[in-house]
Length: 224
Length: 258
Image 1 (cartoon, each protein chain N blue to C red):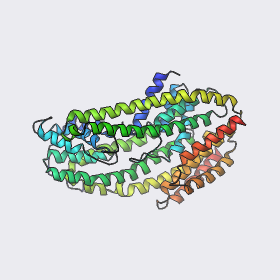
Image 2 (image 1 turned 135 degrees about the vertical axis):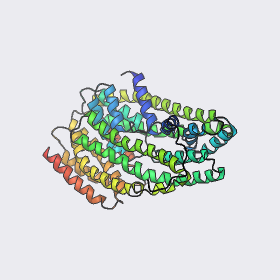
Image 3 (image 1 turned 60 degrees about the vertical axis):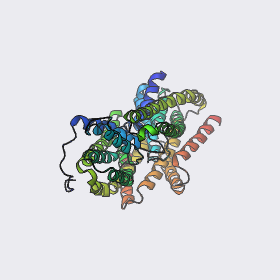
């Protein structure tokens, strides 16, 4: 895996989370798939992305709240999974775990960036209060650039730290792929159902609509 | 929106300016911080329109307007387009500064709460769950990505463009636009659709992730019910994703050490 394309992808997708353009290419479903494609396994990336998306449904980017940064994190998860071509038992678990840990650090890094933006704005306060076009443009471009660098640095550092740990863990992991996948998907889906309940339980009729969808989904699952 | 009367006729924003403002709206949160929030971003977005003030840029009138527009502002990033359009109109119409400032402050709350309910708590999870359902039904990489990005950004880009156009058209009289049925009832309908997509898509997505043979599927569904009950019970105290991180860390340790 070459670090430069990884950094670029992580940077661009990290930027999409809040700064530009919030088109949700940073959602795990997309970001992990793109990372998987970069590593030559887009289907594997999609699998990690779907699992992470189940968890990410709980944390939506509400205003000033602190939330995990999924863009760069999903890139790390996608590449960790795609890096093990045979997808041994535990590969999905390790990839999702690595992405969650990166998302946690990513959330912290976004808070630091927001504080830095505040410090830079304070330094230019007089110019902004005087209506300086130059100061307004400079602050915006500085914030965007810093966010790009934040995402790129986070992705590369997280991958550099997690890749050897993932390799070491997978060398010791029992060969049962099914159990490992079952555990990770049970954890992820629990978060989804909990999040969906919290989001929609107050909407009139939503519970019954959910049950109707669930029955239909289970029938289709059993028949497929 | 046609029922809402426009402000007195004014020359439309030149196409080039409109595109400039629209593209900048995509980066409105580029310098987001805990002091002025999106304030500098609003100044950044509105700047191309302010160049149309008499005398162009860097005149005292331009500087005063840009300073006003670069102070504290908080809104949902997509719906901020309404504010940017309306404020650009107010500045170019030469409305009194005190009136513009009052209007600007009054917009913050509604544009934040309406956008959060409609987009973050409605449209985004809905699109995500639809894409997961497509994934569960066996959709390939391109189909799943196109479903999510196409559906989501149809709403996203339309909302930004509509907001800018509506804000510009209505100026300081833009408030009634926020009572549009899409904003009032949209979250309820989208919430129901998302609830259906959750119920329908989740078992299918789980089945696909578990893989061929679907070993442990029954156990997984029981575990999901128990885990979800725990997460709902702990709501407001511990976030589910943190619990997931701890649970997976424990499982990794158990698998590697045992």
